[in-house]
Length: 330
Image (cartoon, rainbow, N blue to C red):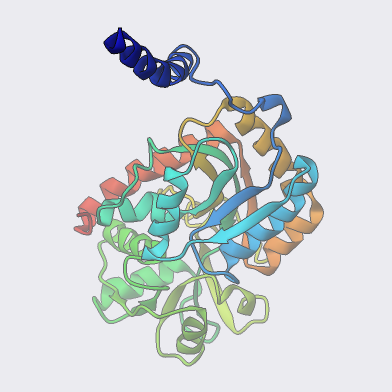
């Protein structure tokens, strides 16, 4: 009798847990938030770069505008390190409930995974929400230089292998790889002189220490006549320098975008994705947002969830092939 009583007491202690486990098995979504009421609390956008940079500031502006439609605060959390890898990793590991999303750019999701191991899979670990901008990059020479077109620059480089120099934001930056691809296409040899930051690029270029530069910081000097823009690295001509052709117009088919957009962890419900997209698209459409992008040297480009995902996947594959050809891939 005592043995039966002991067994009953033991069973009575574990029985509630058996019920809980059963309910979880038959209904994994038990206790999940009603999607119709999303969001019911603040949303966090993880930015993988430091506060005050272009990526951070666009995310903050979009967060402010998007929060008006969502009816909840949208806060920014900067997770810095590893050239963006730490922040991107945090986004991939967050709960797929819509309350933690993130800001992504080209380098940590499209380029770096080909160069070294990262703790996420670009194609599998994210739900894409929307693209909202591209960075603007232009290849520039001094206004008093002999090169009136990019073809002039290429022809001179062909005559003088390894003599012409160019600067980019850094080794294996997007701009560096792009120039190496151009050099491969044209079968020319250029001397790469990377700089550390926008200020150094301007100083080196305006001081005549390099022959050309591919980046963003010299764009404001083109309308002022201090430098000559020969080509821009974007899908279309830039409104601030409409007379400068794109590399594509010049016949170069190096297709990948210098993107800036929003993603969430994989597995996010499509209905929540739509709510987030709709809210931040309203922010994107606000004239103040596009005016703000222009002050940062960025251009507005919108792609919805599926289009954004398709573009990133294509860019990832294309760049992987290019990096292998150039001998940069891991």
